[in-house]
Length: 456
Ligand code: ARG
Image (cartoon, rainbow, N blue to C red; front, side, top):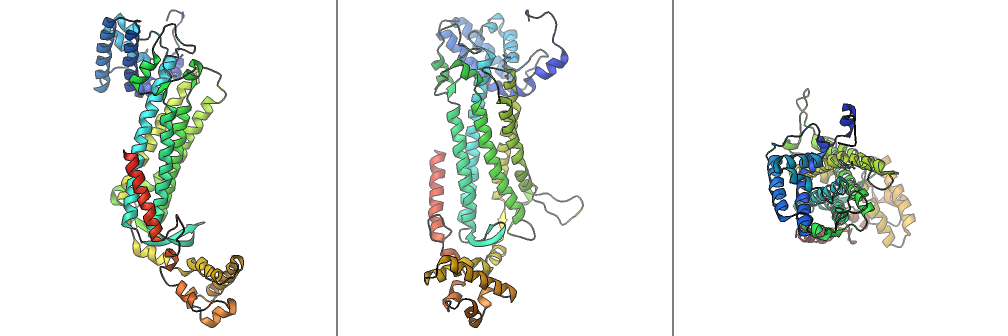
């Protein structure tokens, strides 16, 4: 480098070099370079003969990379320089023409946008797979009652299908968030040059079309400094990882001896090195634990971008490792969640026994009084006293005798015992989005329709 008299300090190189991690951008960099070279030839900036040589050279570099034969040289600061260096070794001085009307600043922004787009599509596919599995499980456990919880206390009974579909809708929203990342990456940065545009009449829209961008970034300063799409991906990934964590946490709880609602298959469990009887839901625990890591990647990139003046700053090189790690983490977790769930068995008897706890029908008893004209607040108080009486006398609600009932709630009659009859509590939740079987069936139909539409 002619501007410099002294060589770079090895310590500086260690800090500055990104090729060890941004090598992962290579496929996007090659695709981009091909499109850029074609544009240069179409615009008359390089000759068709030059283009032919560049195409052949880039093809040869691609083969080396795909066959894992590409050797990174000590002087290759990043993947962009590594590819150009190798191209020039293969194709000769014409390799030096590739970087005409381009800067690494618009180049790297373009590569990262392409990568975010590709992985947003992957995430969407993995989410659809997971949602499909949840819908199938809901179908298979349509009318299995279990207690629904608030504060982790038994609250009201629900069907397992309804519970599983709650997770379905969370992942549906994640899918919509990843969809937004496709919008966030649809304007091509390339052609912005270092920051101000380039000294050639390039055809950015041609490159945009070649690379599958819907349009071009309007402002060159914005184009080279924009990393919103990294934030958008990370935000989508963080929320998705949080949902996976909540699912994992629930499986951990449900597979305890104490709950006994489900058992994760052997393929996603591990044993203890000491206690022979143990079967641990490690996969679910790790799903639970990965979320803060992804959230951390998001906050790291916010920190990197915070306060940066326009336009390119080397700080931006630090966007990659958090992004790559979040991609790897969330894609692996989505795959694991799906397979783990598909191999999980549910214990209908244990869930039904827990759901038969009559105290979770307390709201239904209160509503019986409401139907007799008692204001809900008052009914709430009456049934609360009834529950206390039962707890004190160590009885279930239906074991209270009529005299005992009348002490607390004179307006209750024999229908009280009917309300406490099994099943009625679930089927009475007929409001839209409620757990009554007919409502869950409607919900499942809508879920299936969404899967069909999104898969198209
Ligand atoms: N490796 C750099 C990055 O990832 C590429 C851009 C370098 N540009 C520059 N002006 N030094 O951000």
